[in-house]
Figure (tube, rainbow, N blue to C red):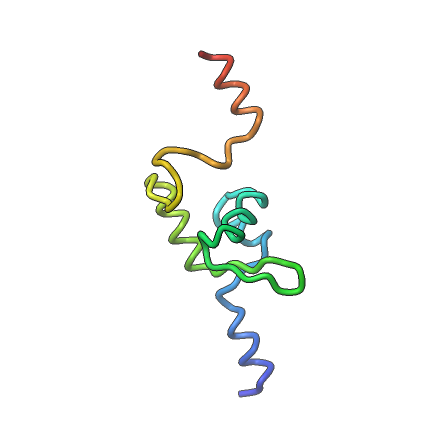
Length: 91
């Protein structure tokens, strides 16, 4: 096996931001915050974040159950401003 093939295999379980968004449905901003706060496994390589697939899946599963570390149960960090305005208007 070549060194190049070994290097590519190391990155098989890592996702660029666009792939992480597709996998989790989280916004880019939310993913960056998770990485910066070290709430998911991520590395910055060449100025771009790479996210470990398993870590994102585990975090997303916990978030779905309201168990994500560092969050209150039921709090959704990815609510859009439009959703917030709609919620305030219905009170």
